[in-house]
Image (tube, rainbow, N blue to C red; front, side, top):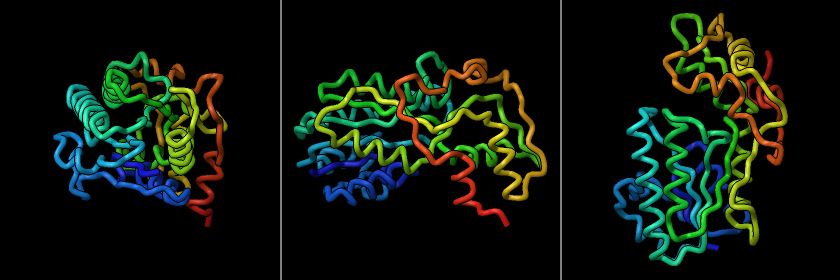
Length: 251
């Protein structure tokens, strides 16, 4: 099939492109670098010409609630409009487990993303994923000050980004599927504990401290496990320790 991947240059998008090409599909890689802006709609109609399926793995560069909500909502509406005009059969969208009650930041944006897609005429399948193992690397970058990282209290069931990409590709091309699927890693983790393991493997920072981020209106949801998978989720390895050993072998 001819499959367009929105956000093809991103962390998950480029993995989805590889997975689909490995299966023999023709992939249209949609990104600003390829001359398509899905937020403004520039170049989108041409990119979707002759496409059977669209996969949306786009990410945002902001966590400001108003900005990220507008960004994701606008993209969904643009893609739905042009996909319908092009005769696309369905759209598969990457989202996040457990976000229904979240009101701020990236999670609120992804909730708006899902809702806007479901308002459109082209059938939509949503893959809700747990945070990636790679999220620990991002957390270190975001929270390290001097020689300490301050990680919010957060229960997680981290999953490998490649595994999520492969499942998203499979969901997109399956003849039959539920319109909402969850995927997570095989074990529940405390995020600060996972970041501590990563910091020890990297040799910096020297200390990781778990904090309660009261400036985040959704901090209680994160701490209580709202972002953990439901009972019907796909659980897939590798574990965090296995991922860590592969990416950062112990010296």
